[in-house]
Length: 448
View 1: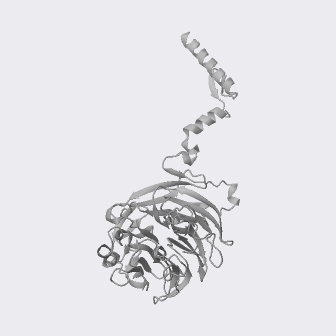
View 2 (view 1 turned 135 degrees about the vertical axis):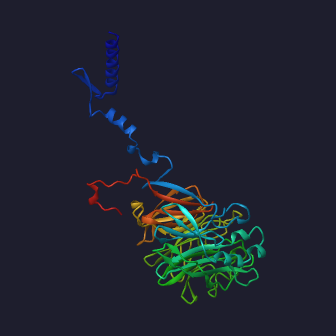
View 3 (view 1 turned 30 degrees about the vertical axis):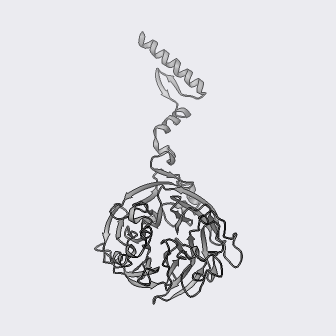
């Protein structure tokens, strides 16, 4: 009797609940409860229990973007990298990386101590080379003020897979007395796929600037390397000469066509260079796409730029900038006027712009054919939709990573590898429950 009364009360309560919702919930037939399969309430509750229905931005350790859900895996590299903000390495770049296939990345820290990163296992191993010896031969500690010497070091590495060579740039003592410019060193790159062993890297001098500065803080050095039309392309910063020569008539050295400072140059196999463009301050990123050069450049206090490089063009520095100086004076002219070339995009306030790449890969299909720009100060990636025909940026999305990003590389199938200034390697991949999904019906519409 009591059980029957209890059952009647449950039926009444459930019926009232169903009526209040205005939705069919269950019905009784032959004294058996049967659920209505079309019930929106039940389907909703089922979705709550089934995490495969969750939007991926509700998952832990996932970065939500407008196009994809991104898993961020952080690999500690304290035994291989230095911290930009600590001790004697204050200001030293975290490091630089390049992909050489077989699921492996070649990298170096700011002192030229090299390593291999294995993407699948997320492990690092030391790589034998003499690049650290070259770094030590510059005598930064002996010849520079203690507040400066940590800021001098390796500026980039670039792997020429076609010719099996690797290049490294660094601030180098041009006079052996503490006057520093930019040098590029090269080594053969012999990787045996069968044994999976990379031979020792023995770097020799390939190029060195003929101009230098005895009194600058190691920044405004440039040093990014690419290859175009069988020539090595190098960005050379202004080495802080603008701090002392602000009048047009006095800004002699970087404005002269007799040296490489404040310019982007191409270098032939013999080490001879040709000026491609000038009027640059500190170019921290460089990419090549379909014979088009695109560089990023640090402004002073504001005015970080992205420039499409045209031969013989002047990009304004130090006469034009979309930022002020560090004393909060707006002493530069803007916008750029002829004959000075305008950037295709600039950031004010500064983001601490660094490397730039063209994304192509299967991992993030909706990022294909877009630019990825890394930043130091903003600790973010910027995904930029760029119209290559019109040389204009259509959109920019900030993707917060949470670390100063020094360099970026595409790994296996378009996975993204970042190296940071706080002793980390970060691997970005698409979440298994990403927004991106192609139904049978949608497959007739190709993705970008």
